[in-house]
Amino acid sequence: MAAEPDLNPQLARSRFCPACGAEAQVDHPRSLSCEACGFIAYSNPKPVACVIPLEQDGSVWLLRRGFDPGAGLWTFPGGFVDLGESAEQAARREVMEELEVEVELGPLHGVYSRPDDRILLVVYTGRLLGEPSLTDEAVEVQAFAPAEIPWDEMAFWSTEVALRDLGVERG
Ligand SMILES: [Zn+2]
Image (cartoon, rainbow, N blue to C red; front, side):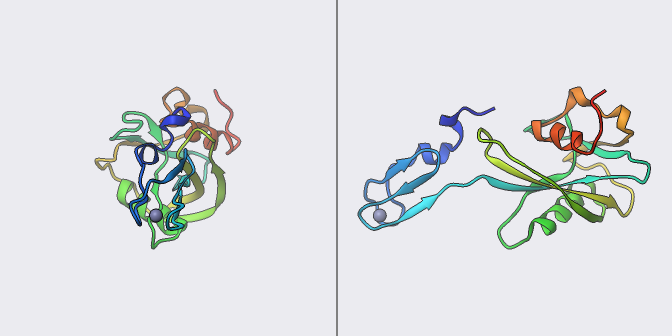
């Protein structure tokens, strides 16, 4: 995981106030402030909305990622929440983009973050309303029975923790 100096590379390169151009005070990794004009910009973790699609029998739809980070490894669909949409809208949009299928969102499953990560994951469970398709982002798609989840090929730390929180034991 990223060490603190790499947590906010954009801020690490910043020296001047974007509003007035004066030299700014940088409090890495959290903020940039300007005594000359009072401008302050705070840096926050970026929210990512995800869905763990479940089948009636408890199996879990996972996709093998086509792109880095985590290319070739398994996770559930999700992506960054854009300004102008809710986390729920982002979750549904990402399922459509990655698997080309509608999803019915279930309850919030959990929120995952840690100090050395730039993102904050909002994870719902859900139910796919059709058959998922392969896309550039999802080069393999499979419903895994709980005992068959590929624990040694998880794309992210949060993938494993969120799946474990389903009550699925690591085999
Ligand atoms: Zn300024």
